[in-house]
Length: 234
Image (spheres, rainbow, N blue to C red):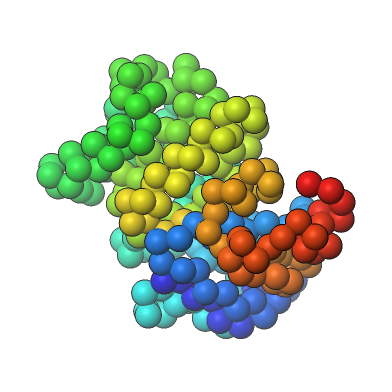
């Protein structure tokens, strides 16, 4: 679905990612992990043209999108949820969802809304609640729900469980699996490595701007993970 070919990118004259080639499989959850400063967020920003590409191509559904501007990517079905939760805190849950789905016709909107409330019944119970008064976990659910309302083919999540308690982390990752079952491809950065691997299909390990390992999660045993990334027990 999404293919990065020999990609080099960064900021000003500094390349943060170097000659990366990666194929994100359709209808799978691909987990992108690595130490701080490895280039994970820069890689995501490069897809959205928020980092400068100096070499390589980005292909989405067999179309070269390397030069397509950021504001046109959502029209192709590529939706990004950044670390900083994106919603209008002074509006209700339902008002936020209406705004997110404003480009859909009534039928499409209703279908998306049903999917959102099926995955996130917590939001359905709080449709008229001002978003700032939701719990941290509920706010993260709302941010993801807003992304779903945009009808993505590819959903990119940057640390969706950041700042959440371990109990809530498992619940949210379960919901991300439910989103995949809707036919949505997911590329996800996570710091909760051990837990996130359980819910992923494929894993990519990034270090110093380069991919040092990629494959199915079943191929990534504990010994490899310790050696390649953690340097200790998990």
